[in-house]
Structure formats: structure tokens, C-alpha cells
Length: 178
Picture 1 (cartoon, rainbow, N blue to C red):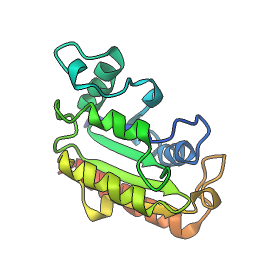
Picture 2: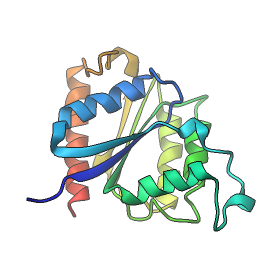
Picture 3: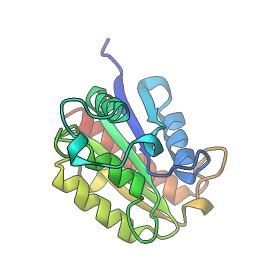
Picture 4: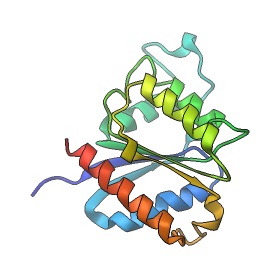
């Protein structure tokens, strides 16, 4: 029997009760026990990126993030847009991986679930491209007005959004199997 694929889910929101956490939980529920999910809950605890600390002994939280990224078969990022851009904590976390290359050729799915989200989504896609994530057009999704489509019980209530998320998941799993 093949081993279960490991997926690291990262929310770009620091809120414990965010729409993006609800979305991650909805996806976990949709996939059931077919995959092993690890939700990275300490994005706010990662220190500010400092190239002077990016050496053989980086901060402990950075070591933990890098380890979880390396152990994952795929990365799922669900994020809001803040002030028309990428949330600072998420960008900071990604900055810590530039020199160590944990995202390099790693199958990655990006969902921006926000009020509007277009500018933050486009900006984060550029960052993920420059660090050479393994992505396709089918493994990225923008969900505008997300609070009206995903409820606090981690249920995607909008049929069109549910279908889009199912399509993204299918494409993401195919990408991980390549």
C-alpha cells in the first residue's frame, strides 16, 4: 500500500478564527484521511527576516518551518489580501526560504480568499514563481468575498466556489503525483 501524501497547509492570516483557516479545514474535511495534513500555526511567531541570521543556525521557528516544508509532499497556501498586498507575516515566512530553497520544485497550491484579493494574489504568485514553486494555472484560485462563501463550520456554502476548490484539489493532487 502506498504511503499517504503529506500536505503542509499554511494560512496567511494570523487570526485563529479566519476565513482562510475555515477554508483549510474544509479542504482537510473534503480529502478525509487519504492524506496527512499538517497545519502550520506559528506564522506569527517567525522572526522578521534578517539576512545576518540566515546562516548555519537560523532561529528555531525558521528551522521548524523549513523542516515542515521539506517533509511535505505538497504545500497548500490559503491567504487573505491585506491592504492590497500579501500579508506581511506570510511574505516574511517565504523570505526565510529564499536562500535555503525549500519551495524549489515543491508542488504548491495557492488560494487567495479575501474581500477582493486580486492584487495580493497576483503579488504572491510572482513571489512563488521567483522561488520556483511547482505550480500550474489550475493550482491557484482567487475567491473574492470569501466570507460569504465559507462559513464558520468550515463548509464551503457557495456551489461555484465548492466546484472551483474541488477542481484545484484534483489538480494539486495530480501535480504532487508527477
